[in-house]
Length: 162
Image (cartoon, rainbow, N blue to C red):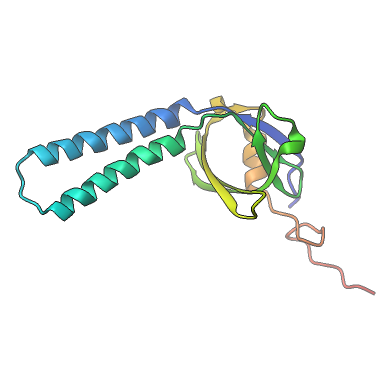
């Protein structure tokens, strides 16, 4: 197998992902409210745990709702991530993993290197309508073998040195 060629795609907010997050948060909050008003006797700790879970759902909604358009770049050896309104030279090296692939949409975990050395994680929901560029090319780059550190393709055996 060969390594995927270089690729650069812009990523806009996915309407389907935003809708799914809104529905998830709304259903969670309505369910919590109905449970609290039902008169079911539970301890204060259980109600507090439910409140923490609802808060986590709202926080997840905030994280999944990207406020900036991003760019993913594959140079044939490594992924880079950056903001679409900035030059490609500002892009940071990143690890990109497919966490969920439903064919028509994917959930990507992008861990970008930062100046402090800690990896910053972003979750990106992508679908053909949210990708500015080649959806097929992006899928190929995500699933292609990674080149070995020495420069040979991942599935090619290293040649013995003389």
